[in-house]
Image 1 (cartoon, rainbow, N blue to C red):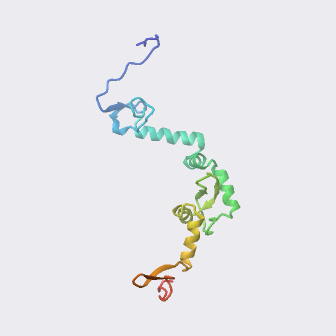
Image 2 (spheres, rainbow, N blue to C red):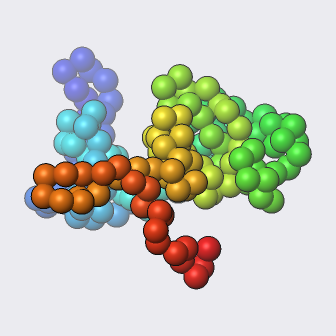
Length: 173
């Protein structure tokens, strides 16, 4: 079959409504089995999800040597070799707590610059404090027991006091 320009084209496949043909595995599947693709006129990818995943895995392996290298390059602009060098500079431990075998590359969310390699808990802690030195300083103050609260003494009369003043420490501390 030829198109309006005289080029050879394949005839369109007859597929029932709500289904698509996967060119990789050669089967007709429901459109729910295809990943979404906004750039395609149909709104769905050419290959079904299993074929799409297999192609993606093969591409990552061929171009980057694996998922880890791909992730580090795409997200942080460094590879596994740079990660290993930074970890060696840190002595092979978490940059904050000194824990063994840290696996998380920490970066400044504003600038994107890599800061160091952290363990799961330290990396998550910085994220929970939104990388804010002020929030971390307040947390340190809180942990030291020097945060102050208003205490009602008489109706309409408040006094600032420490939450630990006048209360025995918990048995766990």
